[in-house]
Amino acid sequence: MIKAVIFDLDGVIVSTDELHYQAWKKMADAHDIEFNHEINHRLRGVSRMASLEIILEKSSKLFSQEEKEVMATSKNKDYVSLLQSLSKKDILPHVKEVLMSLKDKGIRVAIGSSSKNAKLILKQIGLLELFDVIADGNDIIHSKPDPEIFVKAAEKLGISSNHCAVVEDAVAGIEAAKACGMLAIAIEDARKSNLADYKINDLRDILNLI
Ligand code: B16
Ligand code: MG
Image (cartoon, rainbow, N blue to C red; front, top):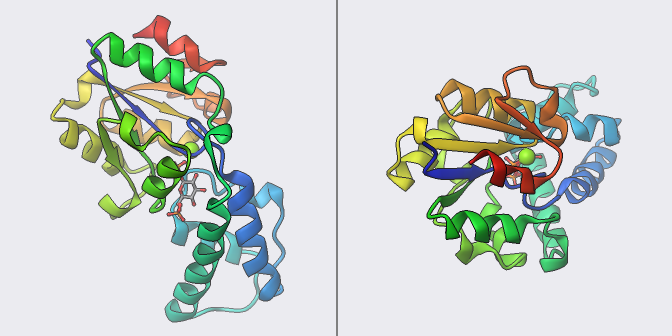
């Protein structure tokens, strides 16, 4: 029996893909590193430092850990300033009605996001207060596909993993959910995953599954 649904943030609740792209692009251009939307797509659900490593695959130059920290910090500074433009209108379709319906059924709702900016993003789109629990990039050491983020969310909820469902748009997120025994619901890109328990086209489909 499912008692809680843990939502990934970026790609499920709101799309910040293009803002990540613009901020990484500025950093990559400054270092003459090739970066495009295709590479940006590989960064979905991947932590900030792991994203940087993917971008640096295109660079022939080797960077020290210190230089990498500077690059990631500068990208994040630009990304955070771009986040100021986010508002309610950026909430993805049917998010609010699904959250309200789940809450009406007595099912608790949580966020399990790799982003260290998750709370800022939720505040910008006016959904911060709606979630019972938020587990984000600040709570973990290992990012998806490691299950740590969802284990943390379940701990914060006080609900055991086998009573939790995860909604994810990234294949790595589905792997993470299955690695800790949760029900894995895939939307968008995550539908490619063979591990998903359910593949949905519309967020409202969750209401027929739970
Ligand atoms: P930050 P999610 C992820 O969010 C994004 O999909 C990914 O592109 C980003 O690199 C990661 O958060 C870290 O974000 O730099 O803000 O800490 O999909 O797990 O909600
Ligand atoms: Mg995502």
